[in-house]
Length: 144
Image (cartoon, rainbow, N blue to C red; front, side, top):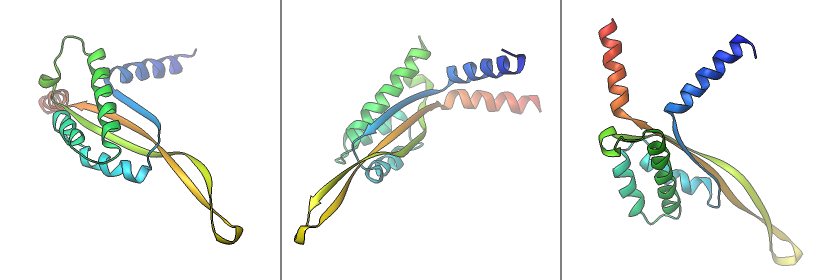
């Protein structure tokens, strides 16, 4: 491996150590319905987002709550010895993309068939820590 590729690979590994991501693939809910809940929790603190998802009656809320708990567990695996409350975690980004569609036919009058598209989606949730960002901003301000 050349030196440029090696440096890029090392930078990629370091970047992966700081990112806390959870993915949900082939969620059998339409992306439009899931985006409503994703918009409700985007940029919100983790504790508040868990409360929103727990008491929401939408179909995708329990699945997104489980995904958020998975992202928190991923954060804890990379930050051993730190507490979630002290780090001030929030939902940095949540992205809902369309997944595969199951195409079915429903019988219709006069021998016709109407197409039914059973949609699914892929959700990517990333956590961020407000404590780390504040420290970086103060270091940048002191350097100038």
